Length: 208
Image (cartoon, rainbow, N blue to C red):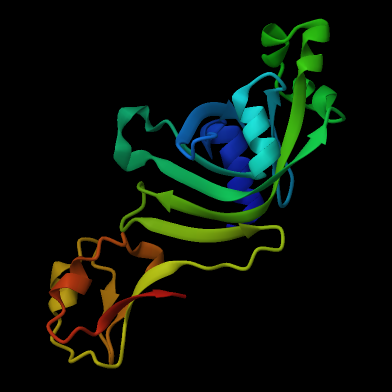
């Protein structure tokens, strides 16, 4: 899938997500906010001008978002998306479109009450998709805007002796034999069990 697909899943399948900012004391603040619109490379949400998050977004211009599909209470059927990135205030020009696509908002902010709202766009950042319903699990990274993808992952270096200990302890069995052995990043839990169990210290945590 590509960025647009993940954004549409976030809006249509998940919709209500956790938004994290920091307060004036540098402490984390989290609240649930709905994803109202998406396009090919960004997402849009709204908040009232009187709320603390409005002022935090205006000053910090950054937010972290996480959401998960319902899965009927079974964690092994769920899919999660997390995004962290830059936001900007785009005013009220999209409010009519947002209310048309999300008609329940008319019950919360009828008539002129919507004038208290403004739209924000998350336009640049990096995200992660995590699918627990797949066997082995599947994860993917994606970017929004002009962000260059950067992630930390466990990799196996040429110091690998081929002992196979990492393969034995991997809970997802996502390590392939070779010279050296290799980790399938799209299936890795990043649990670090292979790293701790390597007798020749061939496994490293790197930015890739």
